[in-house]
Image 1: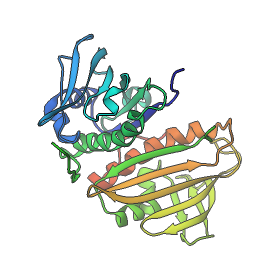
Image 2: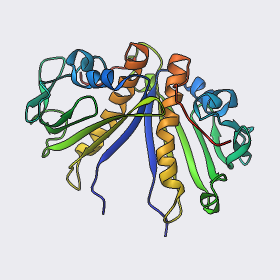
Image 3: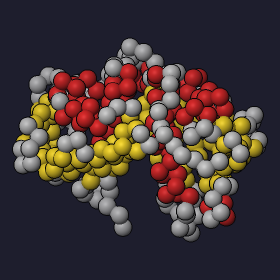
Length: 159
Length: 150
């Protein structure tokens, strides 16, 4: 029995699809808005990716689809928390749509980013954790792309 | 079975007081809310209305809770004959807190009928409105898009 729980988050960002793709796939960017996490992959279908914090790899997965700058999808396996690392992998998809194409009457570039995180096992512990994490990560991503600076979140992470 | 509702969380580089002002002052709301002026005296039991740029009233409601700058809740009743589906009153609640030194806004819009058409409309609407609200508070200008039919 599949778990119907699905996390979906939409945010509109004043940027271009290319810059947003770069911010999602380049570790120099992710380190600024993703709690210091560097994402590392060559972003080819079938390749592995990892999320790395200074002394720990927190998550890993396999690239399922990579169609820059429109669509990125990967499996997601949490590795850090003892309980959550036992769970089967879930799946993350980023869809990027330029709003100019849709309305044709913008005064500047804007894109709609839809993040879908799904395919959780029954009674997933990862699902509530990611549901809490994505809004702050994606808020930080939007702020970084629009202002050039990350959100000044004061986090006290174990390292 | 969980009842249909919309929940959204966004973290904004501002203060709770400025965020409250942006949610309740029509001079602010018309900048990011598709030109809508949201008007009320924000006391419990007071009426509230959303007026479009052309002066038409799109939504009416009643203030349920107003605990400045932490919590605001009002009923949300679409105006008959408008573009948005005409359904029974729903409820929207804004919760403002500070998380990790940054202002956190949680919006819960609930009270929808099981097969609500309004839920899909407000989901698209809130995602755009709240994205633009964050941009306005952080950069001083709203997102550069135009809402349809405004």
